Amino acid sequence: MLGHGLSAVNGSSVPLATSLRPPPRQRHNNAILEESGATRVNLSSSLLMLLLPNLRRLAASILPCSSSPSPRYLYRAAMAAANGDGRARLRGVVFDMDGTLTVPVIDFAAMYRTVLGEEVYAAARGVGGSIDILHHIETWGPGEQQRAYEIIAHFERQGLDRLQIMPGALELCGFLDSKQIRRGLITRNVKDAVELFHQRFGLKFIPALSREFRPYKPDPAPLLHICSTWDIPPNEVMMIGDSLRDDVVCGKRAGAFTCLLDETGRYGSPDCLADDLKPDFKVTSLVEVFSLLETHFDLMPESQTAKRVSDSN
Image (tube, rainbow, N blue to C red):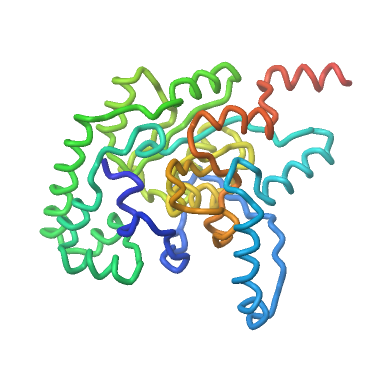
């Protein structure tokens, strides 16, 4: 399964912001674009360099890693309240698959070493860097690409044999269905893996985009395509995934809410992350998403929302 794990060689460290490439030009006519309205404070570079280490240490000591909302969410919720709409509205949730809806079962380190070679893999780990293998392979010649994809397919087949659903995933999907909130899926895995997931666990995500859809995460195109298909603006959609580099960046670039699933705490406090990697929410299990959604979002079905507006008039 070529999921988020193939986006970083050093899985235990937060990817460098400099490794994030700007999104390529939009390739889908029906994709929708939205510019972020976040306000930035301009500080001189010298003052910022002096203050940043202390601010990070302070934030890490007083702000716990939890499902507390980010300033970006609070700003949107305040705008909704000012317009008389109450909490921020949520009409769709898009999930990553590997490591989010399914339990990670692939030895990605072994895959990296086999695809990249020991020297390249060791060098990348030694400098704390990261390699997006899908993009990296695209720079190789046809013969090298074929060999790399055959290795990846071998590891993917092994992963499919041990495919397990993430605890809380079935219950969360049932909860979303009860609220008439749409469910979509974006993965860097292959279409066959998505179809097997649907069949084995009796779930259906529409749309479900695999890596055959180009460009793939962290480009926002897949998420924007789903929003366009649903006819729902990105600011009423949440992206949930376990990768900062792929899932959170994809969601933020699209203008959606973002929720990071961090079971082991490998990413530390979100407040210490660069803005382009900082999720709106962080949870340690899918079970926590229930209370997160009910606390921070208006989940009323669209039909009831229309009735509420009609009654108020």
